[in-house]
Length: 86
Image (cartoon, rainbow, N blue to C red):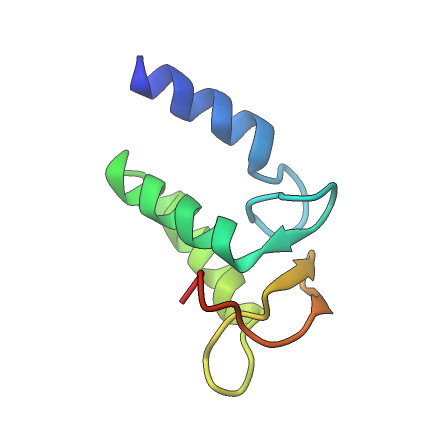
């Protein structure tokens, strides 16, 4: 059952074009969702997905190495990090 739910979640929330990222509000991505997505990828042993999500986090990180809290396919929409993601 969990695997079925995981596959449905990925189908609905993980982008299919552009950077691989977790979608939140329309085309936007928030850092908290990326953290949850990476944790679930580890739980379900999906190394490739984890790596793709982590690459996006690094791509959208500020000079301190923290992801900007809201982005849209690599463009910063909301600068600075969110404590709930870090």
